[in-house]
Length: 110
Image 1 (cartoon, rainbow, N blue to C red):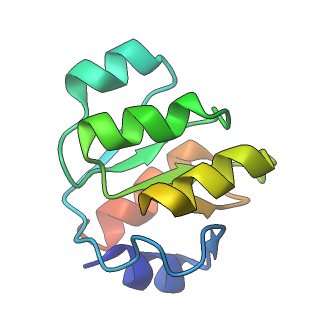
Image 2 (image 1 turned 180 degrees about the vertical axis):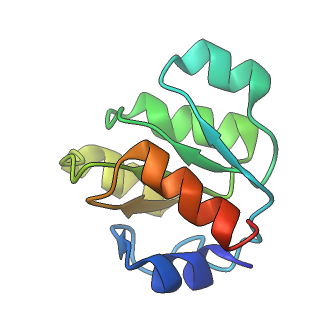
């Protein structure tokens, strides 16, 4: 399943237009400690985090995650969205908790 299909099936809002939506998903990773994400997230994971600053885009590029998912309706700063679009990183937003998003990822066999 790719990022676009997952977003559609789960009702997530895509904040970055069409950028990065065709990337295939291979698992999900939840963590808010950026250094830990850099050493533990896998390529093509959906990364779930409450962080919304520019460093999220840098970590997403470094780890080659398929997308970044921001839970609980947290507002994402405009510079972060713009940089993600520039770099081809999809950022999704959901009103669901990180736990609920993980359950959906499991349900859809991400």
